[in-house]
Structure formats: structure tokens, C-alpha cells
Image (cartoon, rainbow, N blue to C red; front, side):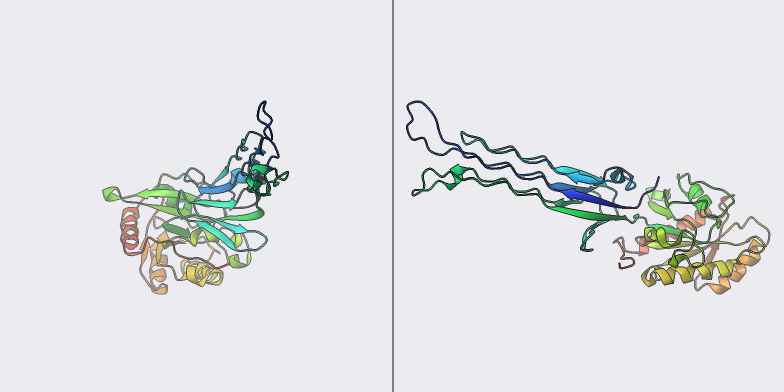
Length: 340
């Protein structure tokens, strides 16, 4: 199951109380204070982990609380600090404070570590308060409570290339033939119900990550169909691969109409996304009338449209080379997506 949004409650552990104690030993009259400090509470950390793909694990548990610190004891023994709690999330997760709405961190790199709830400080024992004028203090501090907050997590996949297009344009078939991914492929709309990732390898050990999202339909930016629920997953891509059915069934949008529908939806969702570099691919060139569809599509788009057949593999190697060439010219830094 692909989960890309979740809420969680995090709280740092409470600090242990300080101790009030005095030396009580034979032949040691008027022993001074020896109450130890309480231990600090454990903090809650979030780490971007490449082994985690979705937010499914964190949805199984809504509350994450650090361990409390132990109280101080006599003989100047300090309490043990609580253990930190580490939550592993997929890279690409945006961590927000749910109530304030501000972004705490965008986990764009594997290994990034973020403290989301600091543990409370342990209280001082009475030994800490001893002075030259107060040699026998009978007070100690209570441990402080740990920080607590609700977090909202939003996952945006990190990929080099994002596949877009109407349903049944052949995006999943294209991904399966260009990479080792095995997305579900069938001849009905919305076969792809969740984003799919695949690694495409080329010559000289070059590789890039390609993401396929469920097909868009008219009104997707308003939530029609699967709507913009998964459009966020191509906001981080450096290059858009726009796949169009060159030989659609009777009654379906033509290749030019399909291209324009998806372009309008992308622009309505995020102008920054619509401005991303794009390669237009006319798929299903093995079918009748596909050549005329490709010809009309090339007249309609600003750049060149490449003809391929994901089923037979025709044109896929040329497409790979074109993608590698485009990616080599684009910066590798993460590009900002729709502001929210």
C-alpha cells in the first residue's frame, strides 16, 4: 500500500526529578547534601532513510514519545537519561508542524536528521543548591516536560524524470520496458493507482530514476478522477516525459487533444511544474494510423515529439539517449514545486 500523507504526535521524554538527600555515615557528623540530578528525557528524531519507500509504517502508530529520564539518587548519583527515539521516513518527506503550518524540514537527502521534539531537562538535586550560606538546602527541582507537537508528513517522491499523460497512454508499459519496475499493466483507465518508481540504466553505467503517476484527466487539478493527489510526486523531477497515445480508440481524445488537456491541468496545478523541461513521446507507434497521429502532434507541440512503441521496444533506445542528454544539461539540485 502506498501512503504519502500522515499525521503523527511526537513528544520528548520528561526529565527526571532531582533528589533531596544528605550524607548519613557513621563517624561523619553533619554530612552535607548529596542529592543527584535527574536524567534528561529522550528526544524524538526523524531520519531520511533510503530503505523506506512510503509513510505506511508511521501510520500504524500515531504517537511517538521519548523515554523519560530517571530521578536522581543519594550519594550524588545522577539519574539515567532517557533513550532517544528515531523515526525512519522516506527521503522526499516534508515535515510540517500541523498546528502552526510551518515547514520544519524538507528531507531531500538520505541521512538528514531532524529533532522534532526535544526531551525535557532533568531537575537539579539539592547538592546543586548548596552554598556557603546555605549548606543544607532541602529543595530540588522537578524534571521538565518534553516538547510535544503534532506533525503533518507529506511525501513527494524524488525522481529525475516524471511520466505524465492521460490514462491508458502506455506510461506503465513504457516504465516496465525501460526499467526493472513491474507496474500493473491493463487495458482499462486508472490501472495505475499509486506512483511507481523505476531505475533506467544506460551506457557508461549511467542511470536515472523515473516516476510514473496515475493518469490525469480533465479537471484533475480540482480533484476530478485521482486529481492532484499524486501530482506532487512529479514536482521534484528535473524533466517531464509527456506520453501521448498516437492511435487512440474511437471517441477518445486525439493525440493533440490529449496533449493539450494534460498541459492545461499541469499549468492550473502549478505554473512552475508546467514550465519544467519536457520531452513529448508519441506511444503505440506499432498501431494503425499512429504515423498520422504523430505527424499532427509534431505540428502542435513547440518541440520535437518522439515516436516509440513501448510494446515492441521500437524507439526506446533513442528515447533513453535523448533523456540522458537532457538530464546532463539540467542542474541536479532539487527544483521547487507548488508552494503550499
